[in-house]
Image 1 (cartoon, rainbow, N blue to C red):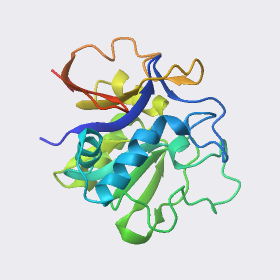
Image 2 (image 1 turned 120 degrees about the horizontal axis):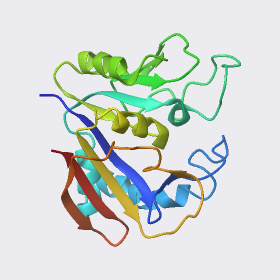
Image 3 (image 1 turned 180 degrees about the horizontal axis):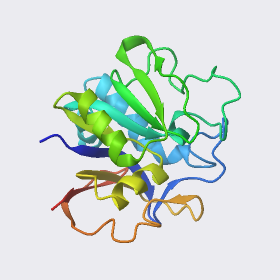
Length: 209
């Protein structure tokens, strides 16, 4: 049965998944880009044919994925109504997804077809409806749930996340957006299936019972 999976969600020791004041100059929030050093290094190693713990987790994120869901904060830095439709994401003309990507936003706009098979669909539908659309687009494969933290929280609260991979970086951030706030019973029923460390991060993979 297809699953909804979260991969490479980087959090600090004190539970922050994004820094404060996300904007064009600070896509991940002020001071938070360095939290992803482990992943940037792993992606370079993967492209160079190297192996390692971090590389393994980066590779897993691509396995059997047929569609993607993300929040508007992950698609771009702008809030509120679209001033125009010139913003086409952070990734250039050929984004790395190569599948249908469903973007949660209170301000839908027409779908955006990019090079390489990526199509962005902007929706204000409930998470259950968006997930149904994503599973249909994935055609039997799994769906990857990207950030930001608020979007992941919505799916956790609804009990829809089957697999949650956290990359815990040994730093205290102190401010920003916490992953595990506002969840209520949303983390009940999960077990830690893996806990593996590299010099750069500790990887925790949680599965829904």
